[in-house]
Length: 343
Image: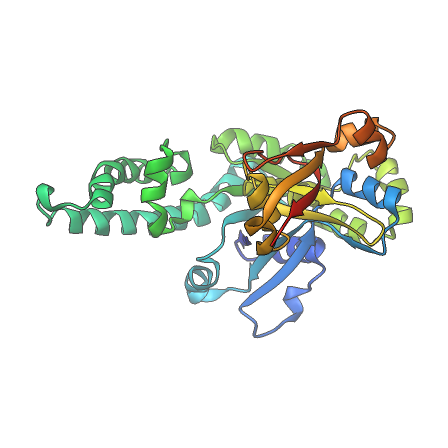
């Protein structure tokens, strides 16, 4: 799981990458691709750490990739280094813009490159399919012959493939293409203090379904450098509920269809990242493959039930809120789990 950071030069993308991960990519001269990891802000995790006072804490995290690209080879550098990314955070400069329409133009410049790249792939594939007799088409090829004309029409209209309505079977048939615009995208608009409404107006004008978040990079950089003890007071004085960079991290995490469950104790409190709709054995595999292979039962309490029961597992058990679940159980975000297994 990795999220690529996209943005034109001077958009603020490397600044946002540094704020989220603490990695100063702009100082890594000669490095075309820089990776960093951001911890996912989660009040539930923080509360569990306070309750158990563990020797070790391991929050959920999101890996980000920043590409230092410029000049005529910029697009090629992006293609080479972000081709395997599972989703994107697209940074758009509104800091130097006078009108929201300027921000839309800047967004479209890179977005259209991604659309054009996907369109080339679709057209090449359709050209090859036309040379194959219909009776000789393999199952996936037959699906491609039906789906790709719809994809072509959408791309020619300047619309990303993530807005293409597909069944699970159709989406699976297209997995090998790794289309740029089929992957989820979070748009982050870098605004000035006096044009915070630009993000909302931008979202209205582009009319796409991707989430949009406004951020003032200069302010957020200051917030990120504050000691935790000073941060809350500063945010309160600025009438800010939470730093925008924390919202970006959390939104990017959920955008990829990930949730987390917790294991707790005095030795460690840890958030385990798994795909949504994971069964209990599959969730156990996040800890170790042996847990999945020898799965017997999962002892589960939801976070909310745990807190309502006085924040003790014993009280949750006595009140019937700590329950045993089998192989078919679908793990829910925020579950507190202990696995029983035998290998």
